[in-house]
Image 1 (tube, rainbow, N blue to C red):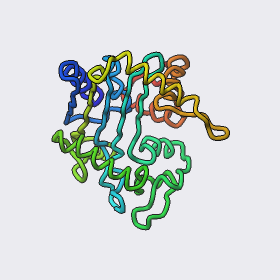
Image 2 (cartoon, rainbow, N blue to C red):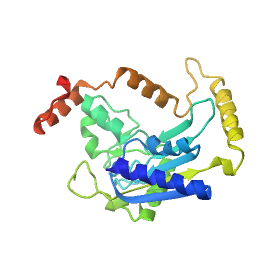
Image 3 (cartoon, one colour):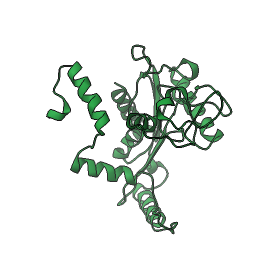
Image 4 (tube, rainbow, N blue to C red):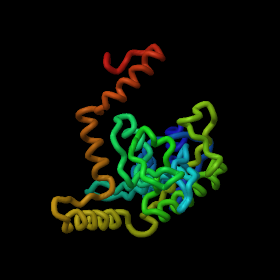
Length: 265
């Protein structure tokens, strides 16, 4: 449901931006929609810049200096079209890592990094993934990430008449209650600033210059969206690898729903 609502929000933003040059469209009464970069990238098909954000369905982060989970991992995604080069697509959570990463570590019982989560009572690092439900997820960049999550929450939630802060419903803990998630998509037509071909050529030039810049020993330059594109191509060719622990859960769910398990497909 969340995916369909946000996809329609993006389509509306594109239609309005064709007329006005720029459009900001929000939605409420939505739900979890998946990867933020998917929706920021939708305006690319119209040769437009896309920006997306949302109030996460659950609060896992504190305010700067706080000890209560009052902020979501409210993501920010920005997509910029290019010419011959792949588009730049930045997709980041405002937390130091996404909560999906925490859930994956819990599923696989892998230790958390010491700078990911803290105990709200003591402030001590939490590295046991099985204790993550009672821990606080830290914002990226300290107070900067917390401030960004707060502002994006107000823009995606409060501005749209959706939930924010203490009002948010944790869909993991309470799947029966309506989440009323707020999200927005901004579409911007770069041709209103300069000829589109000229803009794309300049983006291409900068991408090539950045890609060939000097690197630290043993490192390579990473541009926003490159790994995303590589993973997509690999998974289209080779399929999606699922951890054994996740496959067990999915097959258990399939049995409960009386449908064919993945192992038999």
